[in-house]
Image 1 (cartoon, rainbow, N blue to C red):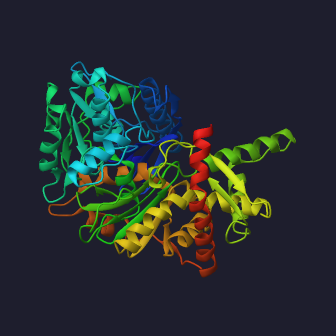
Image 2 (image 1 turned 90 degrees about the vertical axis):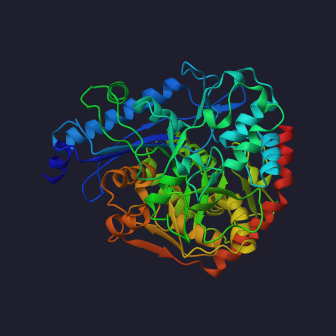
Image 3 (image 1 turned 45 degrees about the vertical axis):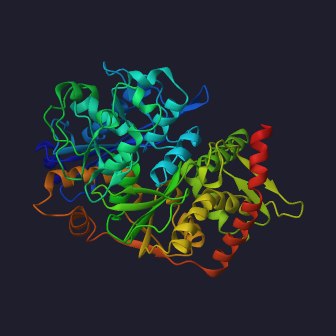
Length: 529
């Protein structure tokens, strides 16, 4: 009855996140815990060499996701959603969505997965003295300029997927600071784009030929808790196919999946860190002080409230592993055996712990797409073994779990060993940690550090976005996001902490040495295939 009253009174909070393989909605009650959910599965496409999603898929997916949430509410509580306390949208960070003066998309959405902007990335990094990753929006824009793409002169607005959804539902061209930091570097002291670097960009040869300045086409930056617009009548109709939802609901600044991951793991304060592992994998640590050097393996972004974060981002994590699991499931079906998907994944993950500590002589590259951390602009999944390797299911699975974190480990070694960045605890979340104790133990071995997984870890990004929307609605004057999360959301949340075990750490290090030696083979197979 309590949840029903919250929904009927219009005080429930909604978070929706566009992930790589799933759009998910989470509705929360007055204690900030989920009370209903909905989802829609989708997948990116490789079209003309570009990883993309069609806009039709975006809107159909959003409406279906919201419809399944509405159905869940009706089934559980017997009511319909008419009003909400606040809404927040988040999505896969970065990428490139360029629009003309009529609001029409000029070229297909270029996602974070594309690694075709190396020239722009290198030139901008040199110009700014600040690492610009290939997936960032500014790298995509500058590469289009270098390529003399015809559409660039028509650009009047540049945003990300989360920013696009928010714009269409509110009419506001804004972006949360964490997501904005993946479009263009942020000055954390001012909570806005770095003005000096913006002027440097505008002064680059060829940029001044266009009828726009960078500051004119980027979204306005908003910090967590700040006003970001209201749901319009048109926006409500786009979101709710049943037309029950009323307009006028406040929206939080739209964020990226990195920002929602920080919120969902209570990792927005200094010396807190988290690892999000699913289709991609990234580690984030909120910094006490600036890094000493510029590293191509480390990105500098921000928390949703604007603090500087060091990020190791890898494009590939579980996609290849999931493909192998699908193969095993297909084999089982051909034998007339019906296996529950969750049960199959649990069995395969647990089997990995029986494997030899170094993977038994196997090596795997999980690269469906490029992996800049190890110098790859394209990817080809690869499994290899020495003739004397022990090809068992346990070694096979352990090798693929190691491969999912290998590139991350390379970047994190720079962060923790060279830069000596400190993190009191690393929180894990995402599908990699769904099987209790397995992914957590593998990550602890990779980082040689304690890894905590909260009891709420399975809720993920959409819940994190709902928390940011709740902060927008309920924060008290002067209350920081860090304090809001610590005292109001996570004060009673339990966490399971796994310490690294020496044999596991040594085994992962042994595997990584083999992995590094085989990078040349991965590069060769990319050339050959």
